Image (spheres, rainbow, N blue to C red):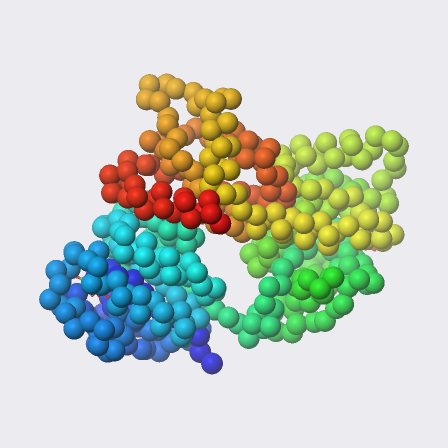
Length: 469
Ligand code: GDP
Ligand code: GDP
């Protein structure tokens, strides 16, 4: 069965222009009247070799006769109350029928109450929602798209359906959320990757993990073209160990080919929620380990540092502390990561690996209420106000807009005034309240002024909802 992708959004945001762009039928003339660009509801489409069915739900309203006055309404009166039932109907159909919903908003118009209304409906579902900010025809309009974080639907993807900007990234995101046959069965499985240099002990650790009494193991063939994953049930929790075939193969044929092992690791990192970064205790953290660690951070994946071959280290009472210190120094950009000292060979502390990964995963899904976050922000500013050179930096409020990774948006008077060191400070203060162990957190800053003029009410209603949840 082909996955179904539905386009929803209020009238005139460009659903039908995007529809035509995706199915590859570019119109010579797109008239500036809503609805005129539309003549089909469903089409076969394909991206990166993956076929899917595209649905233009804007067309559905016409077909079901919910609104006959579509063309008589001036394009910009989109917040008109008459439109709301029709849009709701559209969204309901999309939620029922679609595997992935692309929600379109308009970068040039900004956030409107009608968008908020649709977002409320979408937020209540479990279908994957991709937020597309259309009419971002140039870089400055692309930047303005961050305003739509306030919808609480995750990352806004700036696109221009008319000029074909950002469409590839948008479709990548959509295809990435398709229910794959295998992943259907995976359900709420946690994906863990084991990465590290050749010979560090990945396949030994894999075998030790799979050999544990508490683990029930089965292979999942053909998850992706050349990666075979292994499923593990651990105290009722399903875990997918990513690319286990690659780990086994690598030991034999890739020794010495470090560049290839890095590529392979990067792909495993992309597919994982939590990464076990293996380090060889006899060698310490090497440049290549640091390089791979940098990718884990850049991909915002959670991480456990696993120092393997601990049996080879001659120990006295201080060894572990000293070793910990040197690991922290070499990986100072992921100081939130737990560090385990294990031996895959003797199985020392191998039984801690999965429980630590599960703990880190639950931190990755942690939510801080808007009320608590703003208390933390207030405390941080009071204890250590932002340095002022000229124009003072003001914070209005902050909200967590997402998990996996935890993502926080701070509304400020001018985000140009945020210094990197102050950003680090805010992150540290958040972590003193909520550890987010093993998990990178994302801080984003957004100018409040534009919102203040137009969207004060919507923003505060989002924050109230968060505070309730
Ligand atoms: P729909 O009714 O919501 O599906 O919107 P349409 O696809 O009919 O588009 C409404 C209007 O927005 C038309 O005039 C389009 O030419 C225009 N439009 C669509 N996409 C873009 C875009 O990316 N940039 C700009 N500037 N205009 C766009
Ligand atoms: P991979 O290339 O990362 O998969 O590494 P392997 O699992 O193939 O291990 C490479 C070598 O290190 C093998 O000879 C293993 O027996 C050895 N090895 C793995 N783990 C340990 C350990 O904890 N202690 C010791 N002493 N040797 C280990």
